[in-house]
Image (cartoon, rainbow, N blue to C red; front, side, top):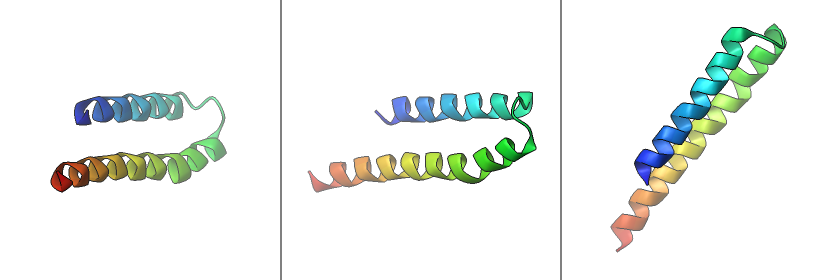
Length: 59
């Protein structure tokens, strides 16, 4: 489960990184994505990881 989540997060970050490198929308969109999207991805990833660990510890 954790490996699937890590792979999914890696694919999303890679896609966003390639989108930022290709720069189709200009610098403002790059700044917006870097400011808002990446922190949410990190929070979601760590939240699911911690929830999974807490669920295992509760058993």
